[in-house]
Length: 209
Ligand SMILES: C[S@@+](CC[C@H](N)C(=O)[O-])C[C@H]1O[C@@H](n2cnc3c(N)ncnc32)[C@H](O)[C@@H]1O
Image (cartoon, rainbow, N blue to C red):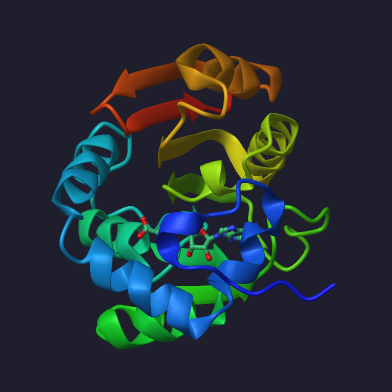
């Protein structure tokens, strides 16, 4: 069955959302709205990256899950200028924007298109990674068992001692209690959830060395 992408305000709350993010008009509308509001998210990204154990000049292998147009990937490169970041997303229109907006950083970006809701989304990702980040992407799955599975897959992509940061809307997908449980069940240690605002939380976790 073919599904028509709806306007941004009408997210379908299931993993078919991936269809919407492939549509250039939906992506332009989302990015236009987002361009007015990203400051809290960027500030949270910077604080989360500053709390990682890595030195600025480490040549980190990093992964941005549901990277969109690359805001978090760009912040990783700002914090760790020798890193290489793999941007994973289902949306080619988002990747086109990433290549335009962060043209000065694109040499340190790799792009992998895959759908988090499908088993095998990691097959082209590479790794293992020192650092995995994600921002307001994973909640789009709107399915707690899928989210728990994605956390386990991210865990599998990390090196021992690797860090995972997820800045996300968690209210409708387990809340703080559920999300921290999904991370612990995936094998992560040092799991933390910090509330940033009514909508946003910052989750962090570490794979044991
Ligand atoms: C709200 S945007 C956030 C983008 C970016 N992380 C940021 O903070 O600006 C959500 C992103 O998740 C991606 N996404 C949604 N469902 C996905 C899926 N099933 N697999 C992979 N990416 C998905 C979308 O394509 C979109 O780029």
